[in-house]
Amino acid sequence: MNNSHLQKIQKVMDDAVAAKSVAGLNLLICKDNNETAYFESGFRDIKNKKSFTRDTICRLYSMSKPVTGVAAMILLQDGKLDLGEEVSKYLPEYKNLTVCETSAKDAKPRKVSRPLLIQDLLNMTSGYGYGANLPESTPGEKLTTALIEELNKDCLGPCKITTREVAKRLASIPVNFEPGTDYNYGLSADIMGAVIEVISGMKFSDFLKKKIFEPLGMNDTDFYVPEDKQNRLSCVYKDTGNGLELFENPNLGIQPFMDHAPSFESGGAGLCSSIDDYMKFTQMLCNRGEFDGKRILLSSTVEYLSSARLIPSLQKKFDERMPHLPGYTYCNYMRVAIDKGASRTITENGEFGWDGWLGPYMSVDLKNHLSIVMLMQRTDSGTWELTRKIKNIVYTSL
Image (cartoon, rainbow, N blue to C red; front, top):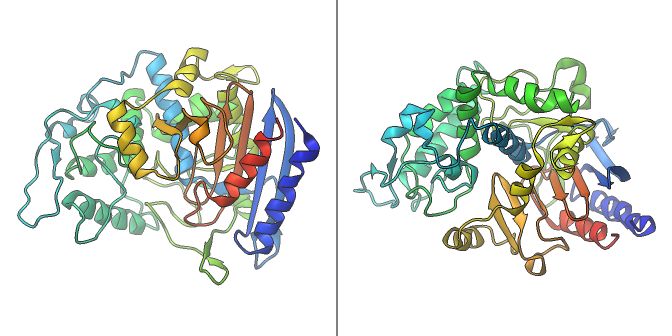
């Protein structure tokens, strides 16, 4: 790679911090199994002037989803899970799933015309979203909002609502459309966490530790941050339009300070990690399932991840609902580049990965044997302007 060109990343990051667009962030790039570059800028704690260093731990939010997707792929390649299976095989309460597609006051939920499938959970075509409470919102969206609000209270204590209980409660909520007919980003990965618990006979966190975190040496990755690591946990900031302010509220049932083991282990949003930890996971995928002599997935499984596609009718729905990701499809809780010329960043067909609500970002490019991980903690970020600028520098350095 052109290392001198890569150095432009530092100024882009420093400028964003100076403009108070973000408090702090770091970036790690690996090419051909070697660390190519590491950059950091700003603070993980502005008030106490703690720098955003390499050992900083961040809340991943939706960048937890690729981990859940890999957990599902482990079961799939071992013959314990099938994309075409009914979710009710593992979670019987889904046998009575209903749907309500309208907000009309006299609307009545009806039984779904076909069962909810494992593939619907992996591809966000289940009909479950993240809730909404507007006049035009469906009954399911309003009930989902109420459940999330309850989870936000429970995660602060007494922490009684478990992963399985969340899935059970969701089964009683009407989905927003017939499963498999539309795309709606939401709580599907949280239901998958419960499915994994049933199949494995283990707590979701224990399965992840045994099958992914411990083999890869991901010692900073968990659903909470223990006391002896709390000083490394980044603060979360919100852009007010007039600068940054601390954000210390629960969201999606995730506790703000990550200081105790939760009962609800969210497969869609619950994990914390450091940049080196998450790079181990990302490099494992870039190495087609293996890292440091430990094989997590078979090469053909990773090939499937990089080549998966939504069917044309669902791709159209994805394009409508995710207009910020032209040139991509979505499968197995990750974006996959299918038309690099249409993308808003320079990329390669087959590049895959995801991001999170607080701005963490990961990218795997099998063709170029390139892995990218960026961590930050600003609300409502995802793949945003700064992400795109940095990615463009990386790809023009190849």
